[in-house]
Length: 623
Image (tube, rainbow, N blue to C red; front, side):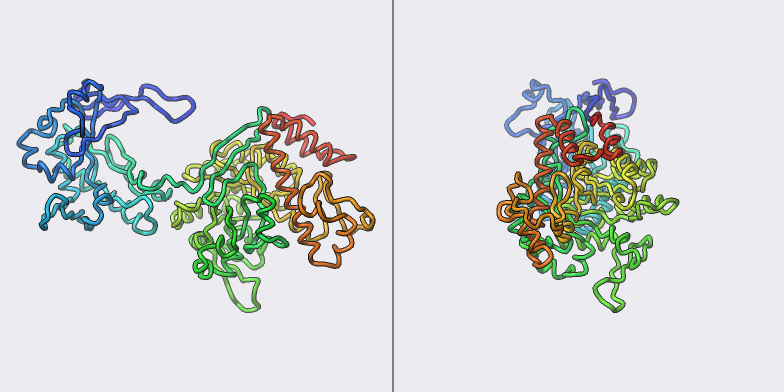
């Protein structure tokens, strides 16, 4: 025991891991020094079930935990005072920590009545109407009588799976109760330390708010509470499986509630909840693991009430695999003439009617729609400007995007089922991109997107922004580049470190009568294919290439609507197959050779564009 002076707790860091956030320290308490990280065995009622105190000494146990609620009932505060505290009462000479009794609000919920004053319990020890009212002041009074080295504040505890306003209410009440605990504790500040508790469960916005408020108080340590109550079913887990030894490319898997998604991944776009030209059964056959739909369009039709009644978009469209929903921010650009943007949100004149119908999309309403949709990944509402925009509007949009993210996170009511991704904005300005990335990564989100590209900028402007954002985003979170789908772009951006992509390109191209191949596109409307009896791609295993010739597709492409469906099957299959081949090459650590062979075939007889040469050179691949 080395605690000196009148301070009852001193904490000293002794070592830090150079890779992780792990650290080693020592807490000097009045009864013993405690080496950290430490596990504290629990002796709820002042004794460890099955162990004597002498056995705990022999095990070199430096600190144990007891519970205020149970000790306040039996033996009770008067007995503890007369005994000189729990240390003497139980013959324990090393350190003690006492929980405040807050957890019993959950474990004894049926016996508890919670108000601003405190919590009233019907005691579980008798059959009469005996009660214990645990206020912040009484909790501290009991803990002062116990005399533990560390006393926990009384906090308002809710089940981890609780959602909605009750969580925020509990967080703010916890802060108010801390102030009452500290005021009541002043009589013993020279002998004991009091820890506040972070209580607001899984909402990242509330976690940050609670942390900020509690750390403003001069306490000697802090606790994280409100977990280990059902939160283990995290709706998104990302695991890296392989990395390219030359480029920034990597292979991983995203575990979502509806399916596992192998990355790098291309997500086909079903804007309004259906893929143009494809049935869901065809997407299953193509091994599509995730698709994208759009919040703006689904919010208009079928609308939030229909989606709620249907049980979400998965059930509504009969799709059992994963979904990602764009927030509707892109419509600020694509429907710019119909949009009015303010700090509150964006007001659209709807394109579906000739009257004055409007849709106001705020961060809160965007999240409300996405909660009704039930997509596995929901995008924040961001302030999107054309990529070619210059000047103060770009910086305004970037900072507004950050503010809107906080509003999205605060409004998000299904955090145990859906993950919200922030979107990095900042146009083509590296400094703005850096600032935005730094601000967004301060929020505890499960993945991040790069937005505001593929909107008219040159490729020489495009790729440095992608590389910069990929370098700045966390290594252990998926990185999503929005709106990119050309084959060469996919290969390059994977090399730069991107994991997820989406684009309407393969389906839109099919509607124009074009088929995707390794060398680019085949425009099947051209007469050169009238007598070509080969499949689109002899190496492709999709149902289109197995069943139809180029000549047949040329014959029907301008005559029959079914041609669009047939070509869409192939084009989506082409994109998904390309990503599968990329993943395989990365796992084999042969991705640089894959890139060279792909570019040679894709640009056969042509020079590889200089932007591709430069981008790949930046990640150590020479063409």
